[in-house]
Every structure is written in C-alpha cells, then in structure tokens.
Image (cartoon, rainbow, N blue to C red; front, top):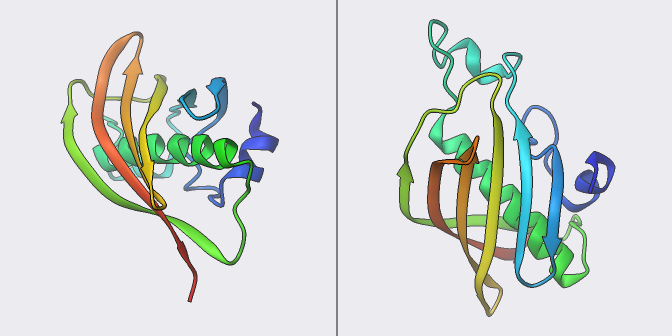
Length: 145
C-alpha cells in the first residue's frame, strides 16, 4: 500500500503522519508498515540536536497509526468527519533501542481483539530486525460531538 492509499485510511497529515508504506496486510489479523526516519523530521530540532533520537511517544504513535490502517481496512471503512479513532491505552510499553535519523522503523501490529468498538493490539517496532519498542495498544472509535 503506497502513500496515496495510506492517506485515504488515516486522517493524519504532515508533520504528524508517521507511516510511509504498508508492506504486508492481512485483514482482521496483522499489518507490517514502515516509517523512514530522516534528519528532516521536525522533532529532531529539539530532541536532541547533538544526538537525534526519535521520541518514544512518536514511536508509539507510529504503531497506533499502523493499527488504525489495519482497523479501517479490516472494517472496509475510511475515516470520516463523524467519528475519530482515539488512542485510549498503552500497556507494557518497553523501549529497547534508540531510533535515529537514517533508520527505517518497521511497524508490526497484530489484532488481539475487538470488543464493542475497542480494539486491542500487540505492537512491535523494529530497526534492522532489532526490537526498538513494543507494547499492547488500545484504540476506540467515538462519534465527534
């Protein structure tokens, strides 16, 4: 899945779009996407100028965005103006190695369950095959008031 289709399945836009491509996707099961981390990322200006490291919260956000694509594709739906997928929980988050400029951040997300509109996922971010971060994520679709 290339960027045009990703943009159809996520409401995020620059500078907050954190998925560049989907490599593999199995509806109702899993997704493998990636983010090319470049020195041009706006967060590197302040985190940290002398040693650019991708903030852990943005790694979790990238995983959540991959989970969002997986959910929308699984449902056969696209984001609209009437509802939003909220990031509602992170359990067991662990950061194993820094993610730096020049890295390709591989995002692997599997659906654990979907009950009453609350999705739970097992998510792992890797760089060069090494685990950079992992967590269980939860997202929920809610109507916009």
